[in-house]
Image 1 (cartoon, helix red, strand yellow):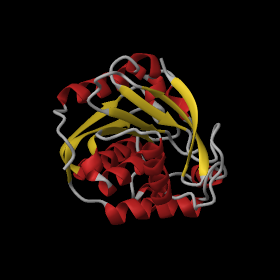
Image 2 (cartoon, rainbow, N blue to C red):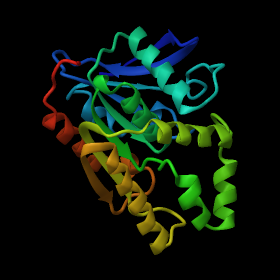
Image 3 (cartoon, helix red, strand yellow):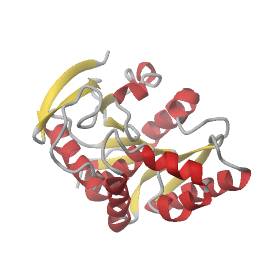
Image 4 (cartoon, helix red, strand yellow):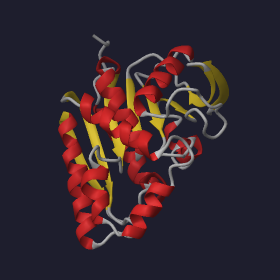
Length: 247
């Protein structure tokens, strides 16, 4: 059963949902997409809570968490998360799960704190060069709508800064990584849909042990459209990980 709590960390107060499974070898850390809070994972929660310890939270200023004074960029967010995990006494190793912008955060966390991380799952994550290579291919209306969404946490410029932070800090890890790409994206043509998959495949370079999978019938929110697919992906990774003590 998930426990709900509020934890003070990094100069603010975070809303947390967690389940602690006795003798669990690791903890799943889940980070939602831009503007989303922990409720986005509700379809996964019942299946995962008996398998291993799970930690999900609302980023600062979202859901039930209080705002933070720091810029809303990935580098600040992962440092807030690092402090939050410390205050919550959630020790590594971690299996990181990130959706969309949360995938940017979790990738940066893995590259910044590699000895804490034993696995990474990216759910239709944002490519580091999305704004340079993909967005210009879309219609003017799509581009305008995309840019206007940045009102919930951080600006469009802060989002761009987050992608640049990840690009600057990327290096090849040696952990299991699974990349899930949505195959039924709204407003995409056949050409842009295929190009989206190509950009997702390029993310495999983050690790020597990467796997790429397409959720053919899912929109951007794969974990809601096909929750069993995501649950099975997480459970398979848990079983494949041979946990050892952090170096």
